[in-house]
Image (cartoon, rainbow, N blue to C red; front, top):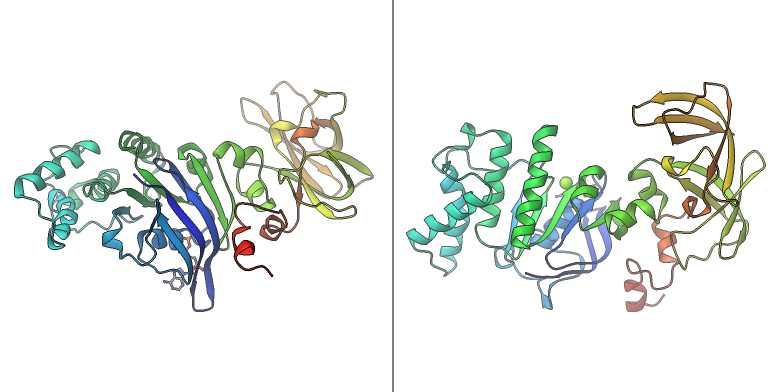
Length: 383
Ligand SMILES: Nc1ncnc2c1ncn2[C@@H]1O[C@H](COP(=O)(O)OP(=O)(O)O)[C@@H](O)[C@H]1O
Ligand SMILES: [Mg+2]
């Protein structure tokens, strides 16, 4: 299989910057997700890897082979689309065999028997053995997606590209197909790029996640790191729940001291090592609901006082919404905790769980010397 290197990629459509400054390495045999809201550039990036678009700038390498100018049918990639794109009048067998027949015309020859064998292997792989004679309209949505997957895989590609493959399926089928994709990806060990706007799907399926917003990659890391140490406000907000408290840096040593509303003060940590915080800089503190506790876990925990605005019982725990100044905060507390609207509440957040984030988004990443996402261009073209 292959490792994919995306270097300094930029793709515009007229005035629209679809994606820019893309610098990531997609590891061999791993499943990497491009995650972000609609219009953030996921499909564009996937199509750049497939070769359906040529980048305005930058390079695409498969291992050390420069693929930037190589046409799509020579890249050994298999692609699956959101809407399956099966040919309605062809049987399942012919839909899958189509890719192989295309290859035939490029000088490679498959005998009839070889086509039959490979299609039937691909059908078995997606657990659709014996259904080759059906036409797509005789299949459920989940089965159609399996056929689309088989069609992508029958050419034995080095890279599997999946663009929101589950978004047309209902919730139950989605979970089932997610497991299937993981199983197949694991069995084949194929380098896979998976596009989704669904953060739960991304966290559960991926080895690595590239979180995108407005064409830029905000963070590229393991699902755990993305959740535990989001490097921008966008990532903290897009993935999971967070309470945000605006404040001002009071001191910036090993730990960051931040003045927050109502004369309160918290101490936190940065998730962006190397970022040059300055005294007086406006920042946003972020804390996950599960990191706010009724009792201190450490003597130096941050104490946060607020007024309860809503109590929601969700079985395994209760969600308490409370106001700190004008900020609405949320905490996950044990179900036996008793409080009511209007009560004062005092909660504790360990310093390690109080994340202090700069306000600049991607521009803040650029201020970190050697940041892997945004140092490439600087080394190429010093300002
Ligand atoms: N073929 C195209 N022509 C013009 N604009 C496009 C084209 N494809 C995408 N765009 C624009 O580029 C941006 C990124 O689109 P896309 O990659 O499809 O996002 P996503 O897949 O994350 O929803 C959007 O603003 C979109 O409107
Ligand atoms: Mg898309």
